[in-house]
Amino acid sequence: DGGITQSPKYLFRKEGQNVTLSCEQNLNHDAMYWYRQDPGQGLRLIYYSQIVNDFQKGDIAEGYSVSREKKESFPLTVTSAQKNPTAFYLCASRGLLHYGYTFGSGTRLTVV
Amino acid sequence: SQKIEQNSEALNIQEGKTATLTCNYTNYSPAYLQWYRQDPGRGPVFLLLIRENEKEKRKERLKVTFDTTLKQSLFHITASQPADSATYLCALGEGQAGTALIFGKGTTLSVSS
Image 1 (tube, chains in turn brown, cyan):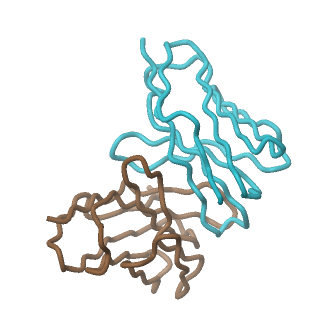
Image 2: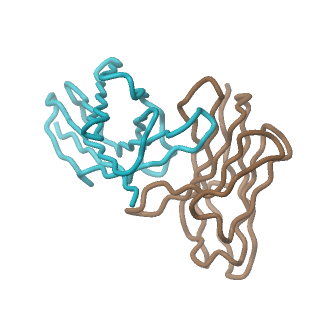
């Protein structure tokens, strides 16, 4: 079945550590996105990529980094510079001819 | 400033009634608007898209309207069921398909039997 997979589902990080969240899709979608969701805040855009080897910052990119070396993969690194990283992170993809997003099941990151 | 507002954080209705959720926006010029359903701890699921030149879209028990003059979209669920209980998100798209959607904060719908 085609879909988008995020791993791990739960992640715990010590302060000062970088962590990388995985996002893989087998839908042959060109565009991929990372959003962060906090209670009462809705989804806020971190980074997005419309094509391999290219990506753009979203509204809250500070403290995050991404890469898009393969069409299928769009990993997100939460760096130690991100001041408040505890949140629910959602990855999504979209084909160019279809406007609806397909979301992964999310990764809940907790800083301990 | 730019805003997307879903006017109720929570909406409680009885089974069989029609649920109506509202999405208002300010200082955006969306080419299309989408609605998603999100269950607790899960990613949102795409439901419907409506373009700026369309007044209404339907899919089974769902209906969406889009009024660019009022800068508002209404999302209706008719004959609501307890299984419809979830958070519903509206999202605006201002450009072509690859550009990023802008999401509202969502309305949590509870349908009681």
